[in-house]
Length: 109
Length: 209
Image (cartoon, rainbow over all chains, first blue to last red; front, side):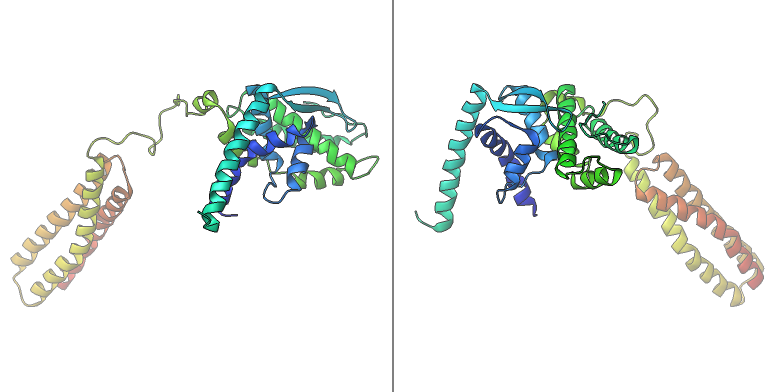
């Protein structure tokens, strides 16, 4: 993977994580699995978990702990109002940039 | 941090998991807030047990644990991510703290002009090393062409003063530069070699005479 793609993915991981959580309350490894199914969003746990914990610390996601069938306590994440606002903002910016770049590449305007 | 699971794990298997979790936690120390560090480790532990359960084994073995650990990102992978996602406080915490011990040679702040001294040492040493065979050869030619004994001894004296002086100066400059840079090493080495070769050269010239 070249340096450019690495930088691009770094910029997108927070948006991807917020979007994954927006689909419904979920836990860390489930987010990794969900993103891993989507081409270009195959972020591994060492990328996702630090972002998750930072989002929780900054108040964008709320955390609920629950005993899991697999043994240790599992952390469940859901978007807060602040997180939803952030997701909307990032999504809008992403769509604008994505559309502009697509048009530029396709030489439509 | 203790690992619990619905399926009993052997002590070895538990130790492997603990070791991985402890390594990640250690690497994240001072890079992310404590709260984040513990949460990340908790997530990894949860993932490990989830993967063990998905293998379908009622009593996961050490091999199962090793297979699961092999699928995970290595602990070092968290270093890059922790750096890029940490906040300003953590960035400040990661700034190198002043060492209590005396700085090593490579950390010592360079004195003004030490690089110039280093280069001078290199040039003097190398110059002397290159000049010695030239001078010795010239002396040999002159002596062997029937020069007088007085001339031979005088030439030897000049040779000794020049090369000995160059060698001493080269070493002195290397020391004065506090070994700043490659040139000081080159200078010190070539000057030392010069001082070693000097008596040899003089002996050869004496024998030739």
